[in-house]
Amino acid sequence: MAVVLIDEEARERLIKRFGEDVTTWCDAFPALVARLAKQWGLTVVGAKPGNTGRTLICVGDDGAKKVLKLTPDHSIAESEAGALRAWNGCSRVVQVVATELADGAILLEGLDPGTELRESGADVPWPEIGDLLTQIHAVTPPSGFSTLEDRVRYMYALAERGLRGSVAEATLPMETLDRARLRALDLATSGGGKSIVHGDLHPGNVLDGGPGRGAVAIDPRPSIGDPSFDLADWVTLPMLDGGTLEDGFDAIAPHLPTFDAERVRAWCVALSPLFVMRPLERGERSPFIDAMLRMAA
Image 1: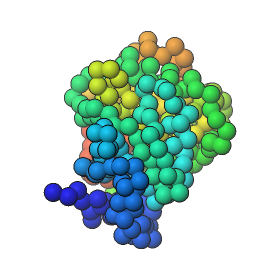
Image 2 (image 1 turned 30 degrees about the horizontal axis):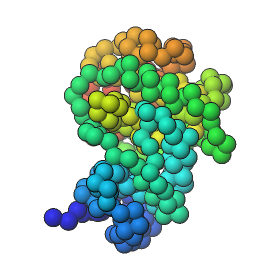
Image 3 (image 1 turned 90 degrees about the horizontal axis):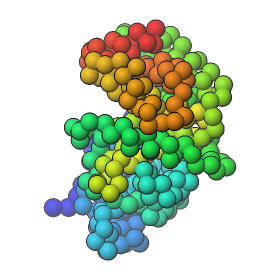
């Protein structure tokens, strides 16, 4: 059975993100995939959802698994490819096979089993996460990347657009989001280092690369700035199971020599509203959400 390259659900997500004009890209998508598949010797065998484009699982003419990522926003592809090429040779980062940035396309190596860390059901491999963070933050940043301040402004502008008028706003007032934005901007502009920041390093963007590879990062939204930004999603993980932020610190700190508890805690406070927006929109409430709301107050 042929793979459905882009379904109605995918169209709706893309329209929500990019507006109605993206329907032109959606209509032309099958032809674009066919051209790139011929160029790179690919057979599409599966598709995965995404908020900024489509991710297609492929098999190359050489029999190897590969991943084709496409987005209508070519700047996203350019920044992602730039970060991944800067991390070329880092075992904890997915490697680039080829790019056609004028088409918003990146071809990546396939990972086996390629399971998202959040779906594996296994304990967090903290030593591997520490090694991952150490590897990506040790690379000398190339020129041309945006700053973490720019990334923060973009994230909160997107969050404001999603929050305004939503059901979540009754529990998470706009004033709380504005306060968090100011905290994040202060952190982004007050030092803390000049590393390549992944920018979206959560357990859904770390895959199991198998026994010889372990935890591998994908899907960066890179900028240059404070590496402590990338730790917020990790140190808050124990809180999902009733633990504390200190439990997260204790888990990662032994595997991260540069761990700065003060700045990591400050980033958790600044980013706390972003952890709960989507669950609140779905009507969810949990001890974790309550803890994040207290943190954001």
